[in-house]
Length: 504
Image 1 (cartoon, rainbow, N blue to C red):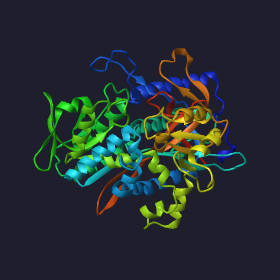
Image 2: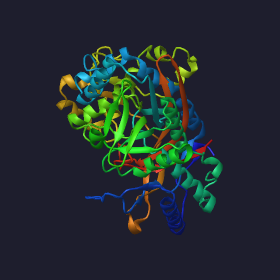
Image 3: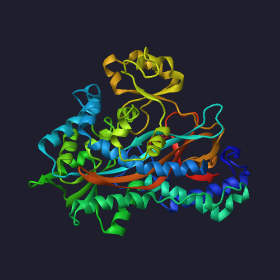
Image 4: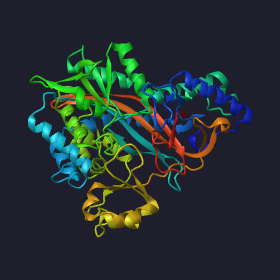
């Protein structure tokens, strides 16, 4: 069945729907598809959990575009590894002297920390990236076949790999247990692709651990205080220990202020508390991506710089975190830039990458290629119903959309325009619905919503100067939200976890 002919969701009776909800929620609670509940004063140790939000049915997705997204991941892994190693490019685009860091304090802190560490001299030449490239289907008016367009490329804290694998297994379980009561011919196991995001991300961490050279060391997870998405992280931790015998130490930035020290000429990173005493091989950041959360104080910024100066392999390093900035995403669309970073790739590869991009520009651009007499700021005001404005932030809730753009531009100081990009809005297919299930709904069960679904593809890359990029595509995530919501983050409450059912 072709994607264009699918009406979604197929009709379920109330009895069938309720039976699926019971099966799905009990499966989720039995298989760590979990969140910690929102509590004003959480106990020091978790005493309860709720299932993560999920869709009752998988959502249709064209098979050829799903395969294209997976294929693109290998190209993007190499591209962003090379961007991270291009000091001159990152200084120009993101630096505090001539780039975005001049006007954006968070970017300035990251760049300044990197500059301090590189001026001192790195003892660790390797970098590890665990990436996720996010896409929407693009079906503008008049088009008969959707395209695949990139929303963003994440180089830090690419979360939900473990839970995305669990929700794909949930939907396969419902197919195997009920066949979804025969309500749709596409709802069969062969159309729900396997998802190995959990084991694939763990493999990337294992490769980094081995490359660091001390197999007795632990991997440091840098986490948020009060993290609700803890099970997504713990599943990675358990897999590392059970599969490779690698221990994990979890520390927040506040804890690391007193627990982290550097030893010897190589600046080996030691984590020491009353219960922990270990060297760290890899630092896996599931935090430090938002200035209002865990890099609020100078102490936290200085602790982040200390970690950067260490011999441990950073995932990501500060320069790789900078490479994931929205301004870098926009700069890559300029003529000749992609060829600069991927000169050894086929023209067809570069075309496929470019085809995944929407039109983007910087708000401080004095003119635009297609509008030479119009500045980027003026074009954003004129074209605002079809735009999103993005700052150099991760984690959801930071973007400015459509009719909110003109009043925002009225208050944006001219010197801060450089920190924002304008991106043409992706136009997802209309009238796709699904049943969304959130914990705490009591007898309300599932909510039928007109939806937009965002596909994320995971990959990892281990790389360094003069070394071939070792990389792999390792799984996927589908996040689904109600169409009325512009934002898409699960952790901030906009989306549910979903999986794909592939169509012809």
